[in-house]
Length: 456
Image 1 (cartoon, rainbow, N blue to C red):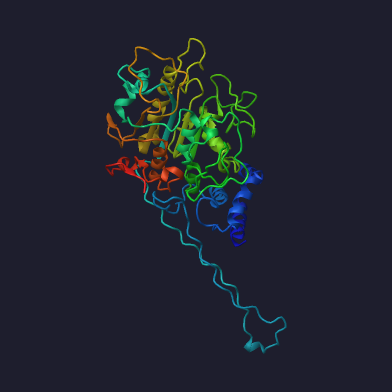
Image 2 (cartoon, one colour):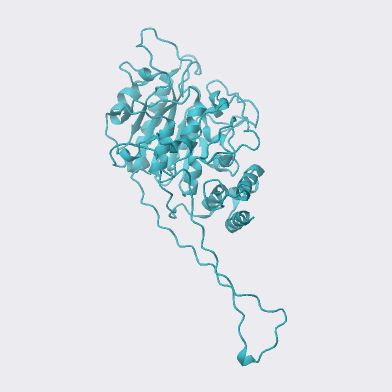
């Protein structure tokens, strides 16, 4: 129970300064979260090692510590999980005196020994910040590599306007045709499972008692990942950095803009045609973000993006942007007469990307990745088009003042590459499959290291 006691003391120390919304969210947090963390602590895991037991502590720390405070250095990117050094043990106090001591002359009275205060934990130096501190990801549906980057593209803004400004990842491929396997891998390193491969038509929990392996990977089938499953967003919160997800057309049942919208547990996901769909929002599939309110605070309607881009201080370090079912690029989801499929996705880029590129945060130290997180399986087949390549070979585009414009990188990349790159850029530990030996990171090239690197 020593590990439980440490967690409890940490929670009490931080809770004293909580107020308002964050306090209410903490009080209302799911019993699943607390039970999962405490259970892990009582089964031999140290309360101060790994991402598992840190989930509650990092949420409280984010509420009580200013963002400007320097985070402790994270382990190198090749580590399989985060860790933190234990606090120094309090100095031992003197033994208690007898219950009925004999009286002593006043001149010889010995003062009662006061217990020594624990030695303060020295503040660790902040890691050297990398050159890229603001990352933007726009995730779309692919109608094929030729439709996006070919000689006669269906996405002219992407191919003719943005492509010359950035680095084309011509070897970028998806893990599956559906959205959730790719987006979940991008933010957590979790591999596809039978439910996510079907885009989770039912918003189902994992089986009771599901555990992750030593690498943090959950191999069972399900949709809402257990609280022990750590995401890149959890890592950022633990490092006192900010994240935001921006979802187009995300509304509540009364059609009012809302945050972190998801179906009820074990209910079907039945989005309106062309509207918001939970399967486009991977952050809504993790108890680590749902149970302590981080998803409700940071997963917001797309309409919030404009105001957040106005200043560096209001722009998150990580920004994930998803259009609705129409403008993500899925054919047959748009109103009659409106751009559809690849054309709709290109129109979305033409509307949103200029705002990102003009923002102070992007100009200062930004990185924009236009990736394809799913395949537009409803795209009509053009018999005059070149012979189609593997539909999973979709390509991606990277824009930043730190990349050579008009360049091409044909190395094999996938969603794990993106997560590994994000973790490396922010000096965080690689999560799940992103820490695999064959996973290549773009970070070395982006920070001036030349060649991209594979995981350890």
